[in-house]
Image 1 (cartoon, rainbow, N blue to C red):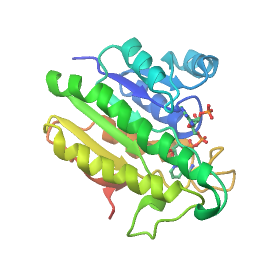
Image 2 (cartoon, rainbow, N blue to C red; image 1 turned 90 degrees about the vertical axis):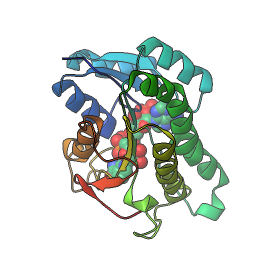
Image 3 (cartoon, rainbow, N blue to C red; image 1 turned 45 degrees about the vertical axis):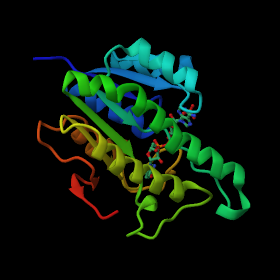
Length: 220
Ligand SMILES: NC(=O)c1ccc[n+]([C@@H]2O[C@H](COP(=O)([O-])OP(=O)(O)OC[C@H]3O[C@@H](n4cnc5c(N)ncnc54)[C@H](OP(=O)(O)O)[C@@H]3O)[C@@H](O)[C@H]2O)c1
């Protein structure tokens, strides 16, 4: 069996760490990517994962991280920020939301998708949110919902451009107990990670260009 290599962004804690752990359990080689190199190393050590420094806002860091990983078969764009305040009152939060949750994923996809297409295998999972769904009303503070809606649009557009061997999907983890979700959230990081792990390991001919929660399609 071919060993697949996965790169998970923002994987030093929260849902990203749980996705990395789930992918290791599924038999993949996993790179835990974090903007702080020592945080990446610390998270990777107990799991037996590999690690790499990657700030999704920094194009040079993206290039270096992708080079360090070699052939990336599975990309999970998980890194995210949730800034406070009203959208129109917080232009800095808006810009940061777009940089981390749209531009970073776009650059990462550009860096890994050509290799996936050539090798005839790829899985790209964009960790989105119900707050990025028009059907669910575009919610959340600052630029969060707008950025996740743009990430959803990126998912559809990229899925259309890539060959059918590269499956590209978005998912909502639900409300999860992490630093972002808070202690009162209803789901564990493992529950939040489940659909992302499933999408990362889809068999040939699986769905592409869709949005999922709990392994089921949800409306954009
Ligand atoms: N928790 C929820 O209820 C919920 C619901 C819906 C969607 N989501 C989505 O799930 C994903 C993971 O969220 P979470 O709940 O696990 O949040 P979290 O615990 O706050 O973790 C966020 C992760 O993103 C990383 N990150 C932030 N900016 C980054 C950057 N510029 N470069 C690289 N990494 C960066 C953080 O790294 P540092 O440790 O360095 O800050 C951290 O590893 C996010 O995309 C979020 O929007 C979460």
